[in-house]
Length: 112
Image (tube, rainbow, N blue to C red):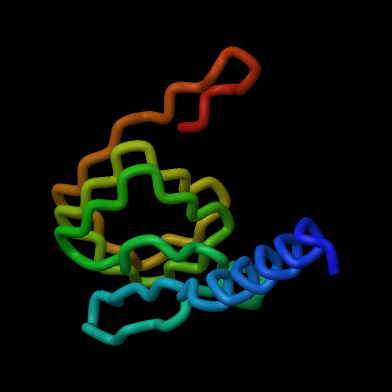
């Protein structure tokens, strides 16, 4: 085998190994129940793998498009530029949550 072929095989194996280590995040409901993993509104596991969603969490620029966050307890959560478009927040608590609108790049539209 040539060195480039061996390198390609090793790279592919490393990619597979590290991608399988990614873990989906959970969220805490207002009654304390943990939903793990977060689901899509239309069913199936949501790919979000950042910090778990719970009170006082720092979610920065979390991409939670179409996430089913029914009854999520997000009190005092910092949502800086989180994208919640299409998310189900029915029954959720967002007391004192902080959010800054996502400022778009030139080619994007405003996502608020």
